[in-house]
Image (cartoon, helix red, strand yellow):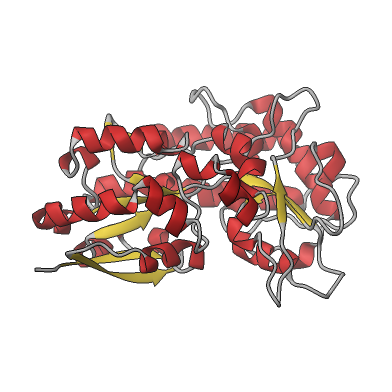
Length: 366
């Protein structure tokens, strides 16, 4: 007998092709799609009532937990399975789904902000000072991404504050300078749009570099309509920084209360999906961006996608993990709007950082 489940993923080949291609004997999942932003705009409890499996991102966990829309993974899967999956996950993806002593999703897709560029037109900048020397740059500032750039460059890693104040002031000054020289006509493009823009073949006038944007290995192959793009580590803010940093992205697979009566089918399906062989041979082959460390460390996979994995793995491992409390998503949007305003103004960055930190404290601690 076949057990049927319903799932919801995001509407990009990276998000739906691996799930469409994977099959599990005895378990059939009907996968619907929506824009990734839709998980933030649609009430999570409404989605949980319609779907057994949800592909979500870690910053939305607070709202999902508060709504009772997802189950702790410890209530669904065995401790042995969880230990295996944790050992296989590329870090810090596993930790990003841990809140209040529980896991709330399993890392499925891994991404971070990195430097995206056209290898036929330039070499990658290694510092933000070098970015300022480029003549054909676009910044990804749409939606939450302006704020996420600031967090990648200057998020407080201690957890005591949202921002490292000195770095944040410096980052805003640098971003303002880059913005003034950038191709501002493309300010409404999200990371997918940025990749599409740079990859279009034959124009010669499109931007050649986006210094900090969520990377999509999917664009590492040449097609009749696109050139293969390349990536490098996030630019360093300061010349003496050990690494350049981005903000963690990616998605996780969450189980809703609706699926609790079908837990054996869910477990069987997920075991097969997260199997290393499935991730290496199926998920990666169709353009998925696995959260399995073996994929990121595979020379064959790396070659197949124009060096995406080796180029961005260091940045991924040091990525800033965003807060996950209920209310964060709204503040994240507000943060990005403030950064966009600062890019076009002569307001004092230090005062702006202080106001951001003060308002963050109010939201975080009520």
